[in-house]
Image (cartoon, rainbow, N blue to C red; front, side, top):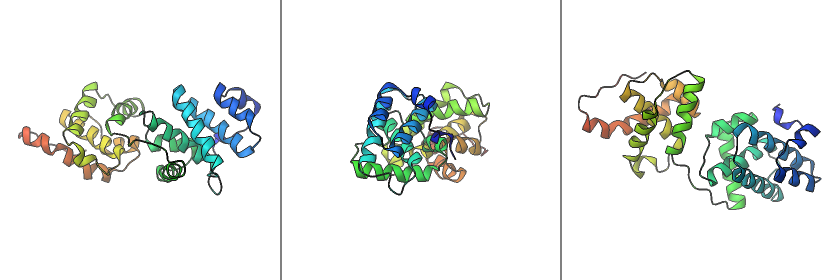
Length: 230
């Protein structure tokens, strides 16, 4: 059971003002518990104020539409926050948010789709470039891999060179992971498919199926370039 379901006076006192106001205005226990969970998620993700406000609105509206019925409220709460990050063009990886409430990226994605349908939310697709800096930072911090800022820049160039052909209809986190892996190969940086896949919440197979396409144009311009898969 996730610690985010803990319901106590201390948790209420730590809520941000708008969230505490919503908490005090309702006597519905599941919604109150969801607000407590959301407050914890704000802290864990360092969510900006605008993201917080929108997440509260999404969560409240979803509850009013009886979205909680038959669904796990912790995952519904995480969905509200994940969608809010996307609305404000600060997307977070599904895995990053899902792990905070003990669920999977696939489950969170399904909840996202259901919330969007019920509330008709104008959620823009997250471009893969939005994940690059976060993924490389996490690789440096968690796996003690020293990737330079140039890896991010080169990853952006690899993605942008493809236009919409590669990106359309594909998971942006997979494209971002494949771009980072491709950039690491080009720069001979020490990051493996396994390490990058773990950070991005994807699989090594997904990276392998994508990175070669990203490198195609690079190969055309660098005939002497060779790669060693790691």
